[in-house]
Length: 71
Image (tube, rainbow, N blue to C red; front, side, top):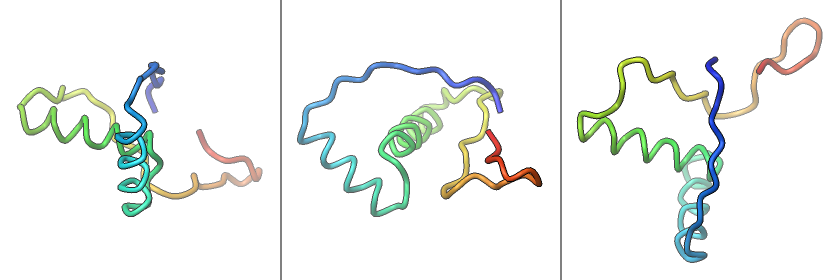
């Protein structure tokens, strides 16, 4: 998977709470929900780059034979 970028995002507490509840209802983390919504907005606007990597599937990462989680 490509390297991930980190950003600082300032949100109104009520917006953060609403996002957190929505994410929980869809079994995503708040961070994954924000990325999902941004990707959907980019796709709808025709601005999602063709080379954008796929989002990680929900749930725990699969473990390799050595017992370590995959990145």
